[in-house]
Length: 317
Image 1 (tube, rainbow, N blue to C red):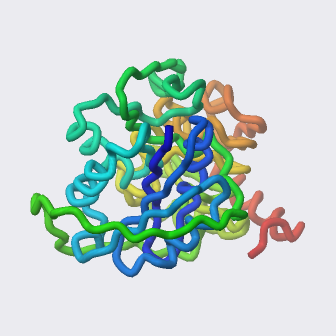
Image 2: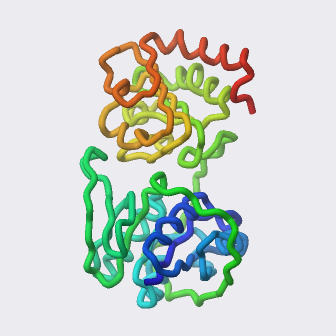
Image 3: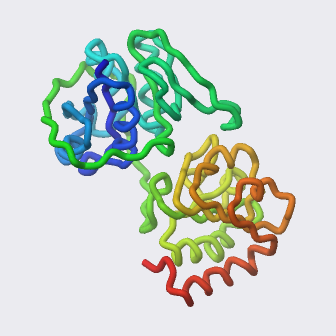
């Protein structure tokens, strides 16, 4: 069974999520092809060709794909689908936008956010905010699934696959790109960061995020995250949210300040390698998953932690 992986990229470069999705596809036991859809995306296709285990890269370019709108990309994938036994994409905003349309057009059930491949037709996925793991067996001829990339190790860039151009599919004309509002930051991207410093509702204001969270993140060279409560309160933008309805992360180090540890937040970060929590409530659920916990006032402890890090020369950029 050959699997088709939808690449996550920005045309010029390939995202780490693609290498992790290729790792999941390889466990199906067949060949792996990667589909790169975009405009002037040869750079991303060449990077995909270097991924270990990839037999072929399909490059589809055209004006309709410049912004990777879900409808034209889904139409392209459906046209390619008969040649494949499985279609996979990272469980990112793009993957979650495109693959449900593919599954609907193919009239198959999508399997969302798989954590492991138990066999060519059997997979595990989280349910109940990650509190239970469900084993799913699919009888569909074509398996359509998104991949929880934090559960897979990225394949190495040791391959040398051929890049083949494929013709664009007819644009359904159901959507149009009107514009972008892109947040730019010198910090690492949240989903791929090795260190994340997150703040919760206890910060009390957007100004306190700037005063207490961001300096600590800068000292560690870390990305900044937040709980849903902090996002809903308007302290930080939506793209900072970590949790079941936000971004799922698994960094080497996750520092949670003023986050109580609601089940929805834990679902998005509990696979972090080391979790450090600072909270004044010693009964906060976050301490149940934390490797290191400090009970105290974050407004006092965060600056002290930053000062000590700088004194020790730890984590400086």
